[in-house]
Length: 289
Image (cartoon, rainbow, N blue to C red; front, side, top):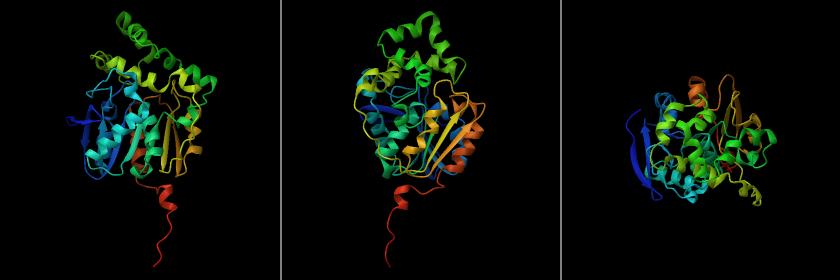
């Protein structure tokens, strides 16, 4: 991967990778990753004829790390992506997201239907499914509740050489790299604030708002070994998509699909991006001659 560039959007410095030429693909990582998550996808997509833009989302990697919980609301982060693409002269990218990046990608797709081409989401299904999780999903997501306690969560995760964090993460993802990244000043609080801003228990008490349909052609990918997100979340997401919907279940892969099954993810992305027409284009009336 080439050296990252940095630009300022919405009062935060965002670091990002920008490689290749062609139709733009924006890659959005989750917790506790950075654009480094996509190191196997970036060269494959560039070779496939795409321009790849992979930011370190606010709070992660080399990007700015505000310490206020309210700095990490979903709408704010979607605005970061909109502002970044505008700065880079990209009008209608393909958007690919994993983990929290997938949640952002879903929201971007239904809030900005004219500013997205294809949507690909890994591991995390549509927020409408997650709004009413099963008891099994609540049990799998127990860590989200644990992350809600400012100061306490940070202290317990760091204690005894990050023992609890290591137990939660296991040997998944870039587990060794995460400790180095989260040891940066303000990084752990910034990462946990994503959960505090968007998955607090109080959020479930708010009246449910209807989600606009996703018009973009959408690919959902889930790994059969995912311990954090159950298959129901992704498999049930098609009902929120008005554009073409495709679901792929990857065997022998866990939550970190870009790392666990890079060749399969690359093949799925290259075979999907740019291949369908969005629902809103299909509904346009033909011009009369």
